[in-house]
Length: 249
Image 1: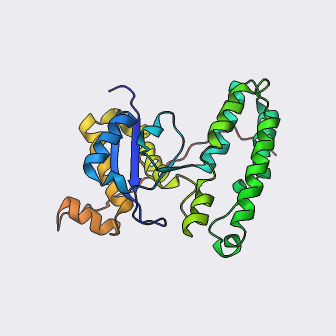
Image 2: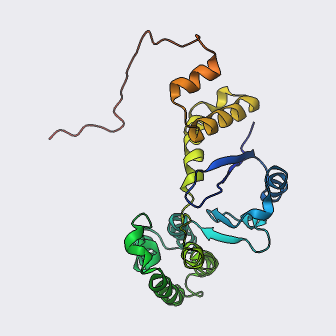
Image 3: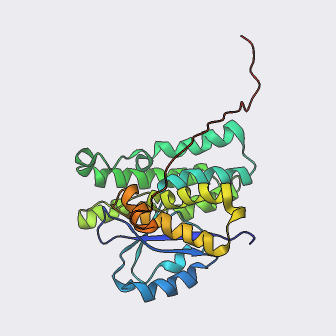
């Protein structure tokens, strides 16, 4: 079949979820996905896009829509940009760790009671330190990293601004979609050569229904296999293999 990108789009009517799958698209551009989503949902009511910042994903933004970049991806992708600028190893790690000096990247919004009273202060301090960070990552010395941080800074503060505006927390990470992608990736990597294209899409649909459903595995299997048709475990074999040599003590 060759290689193609699978993209997952989730939606929620409330900031805290629940998150439901709006589509799993294989080898579709973001512009094509936008057109399809406009047929499936009332696109004009969407308020915020939460994303990993993939190039071209801005095509999902309608006029007036806010964009929250994933803070976890923000740190991870900075490491990649520094690598392209020629900074590797400990030097790369130390530069990425500078982001931890910004309150935004240390913030745990699960502890809302403590954070709620300090949001305006956290936002102000984070913006000031961000500008200092851009000076540290000089465009002449770190050209790719500087461009990346400048673009990231346009949309990384949105969840704080949204709280100040509406008093509600929206996610600052895209782990809702990462969960779906991760589970499917494990299966696809292991046994992809045995599947047809139809089979691959079938497992995507099945996994999405399981992840976002409320039923147990037993109920899920019964519905898919039919009442009374239940697989029975008759044998179990376990194997292990050392992946590195054992050094005598």
